[in-house]
Length: 167
Image 1 (cartoon, rainbow, N blue to C red):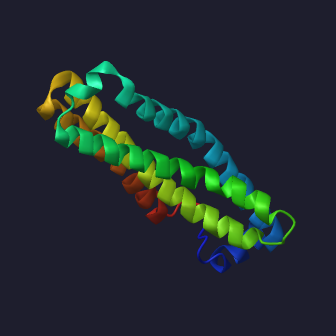
Image 2 (cartoon, rainbow, N blue to C red):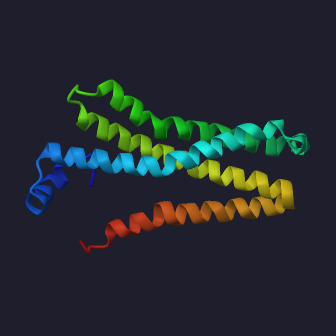
Image 3 (cartoon, rainbow, N blue to C red):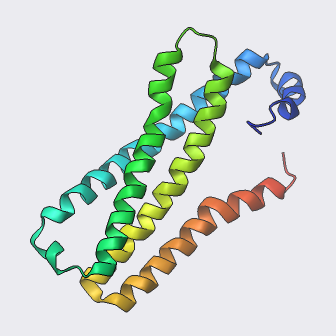
């Protein structure tokens, strides 16, 4: 589905699914909500965990560089939480306003951006934890490994799957 250009999918949806535009939007909204349900709990737990770290005794042992990584990680995690929860609030305010097309399109963009920020937060928390437990080099290596894994599984693989033609 190309949310930015739904007309590209409309002919296929109509022929293969016998779907109207409204039915397609309802299906896309339900699919988006399910994806958000899967990720919301995890991002909220991560954010809560990160917010408790400054109150731990070992936090004072973090150097200035790791404190900066920590703060950037918290910012990414909080921003991700906001973006991944926002579509629910938007739906509530737009309920019965016949704005499903705009809601699906905006929620799609929020989900993309929220997942990107969640990925960055996961990389950041990996760096901070490995740095604290095993040293600076281990933190950098673990962060790079997390970044490569996330980029590969969340970006490269899906983009590659888009190019394969096995409908």
